[in-house]
Image (tube, rainbow, N blue to C red; front, top):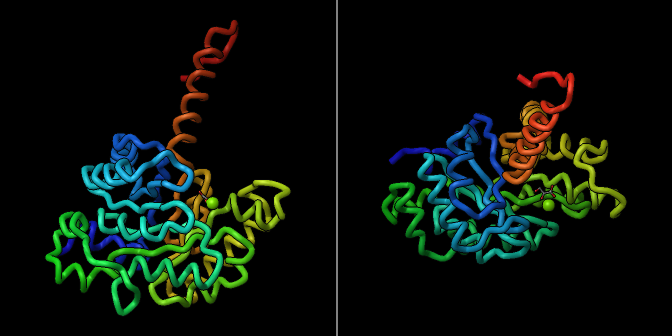
Length: 267
Ligand code: 3PY
Ligand code: MG
């Protein structure tokens, strides 16, 4: 059995770059629409987004309707929900604030079957989406799902190699906003700060050295492409709300500008 849900992890590991939508709005049509419009995958955000258990399950289905697998970001420390999201068919987990080796080991334990972890059996939706029979899913699951530890604090950066060495951790996902707050000791939030920039380069290099997946959040498409150029396998781009509000602001400004005497036409 081979399809986008069984093959996406291999494609990412094999070097096909992926751009992810970052989805906080709980209506499944947002996920389906953005995936149909060209994103390769999405991160369904339960940490800061408005998602609930029900809407995460619907968003995974909406991804499937668009023919794309999606990741889920559970709330901080909610490893039990990480297991449930995989059972519900998420292709991977983006786990926030993995700051200690214990965090990384617990994350791996909840998301990987033995011998890597202790994930409990019940992938009823995941078998449906992948088309794998139960025994085949058990054999494949640890490879076809991705457990990504978010690196977004000084503590995580300090033990990056140890996190990357934990069996069952498939890679890392850098959160540049939290990282900027941590590195400045709360002085600012600035994804483009030179300290964050240097850390982003370092994390990509270390993940690659460990043969693991490097991924990150970027605020713009141009920045995401730059991150792929620096060795990242995957970058998300903005958020659904940012994309919507930017488009709204641009269009309303163009409309209002058109009423001003002598204003240039926008098209
Ligand atoms: C961060 O930048 O801190 C993130 O978690 C990205 O959403
Ligand atoms: Mg964060």
